[in-house]
Image (cartoon, rainbow, N blue to C red; front, side, top):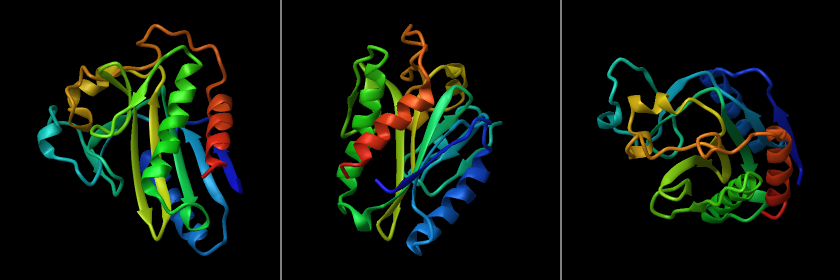
Length: 203
């Protein structure tokens, strides 16, 4: 797969990452840049997708950044791993559902490294451990360039979710690898890079 892997060790401000993604989308459209997989973390930020509703903001003192991605209101915070993509589906299968399934399968495979059994849900997009959500997915497509991505709760502070109804859910329906009492003793970036590269090579 002709793709650049970008791994950021410092926490990237959310608005800065959006500007980078949007520029990358244009560069990919013009054939100036390769596809991208970007691994990073954000400082605490609340974001709203195209289906977001103010009724899901429980703490009216927080600021919610509106975005063009799919989905409702969620948050990003330290200890949550973000995987952003810019993937040109013009050169692959023009099948958004299939593309999302590759993301879902990659997350499920990653969680198995911690002996966590998880599943996708067609009605409530994301990855679930029993009845709790551990990973969120939000994709936007422009002229068959798919971008934005997914987030996986590794060891982040789940109390931050109490200020919102994340993805329209009750805020006690969220979990993380750490919350599942699993030791985090592997190189997260290395594991994610290997799994996503392998699975995306099949697109």
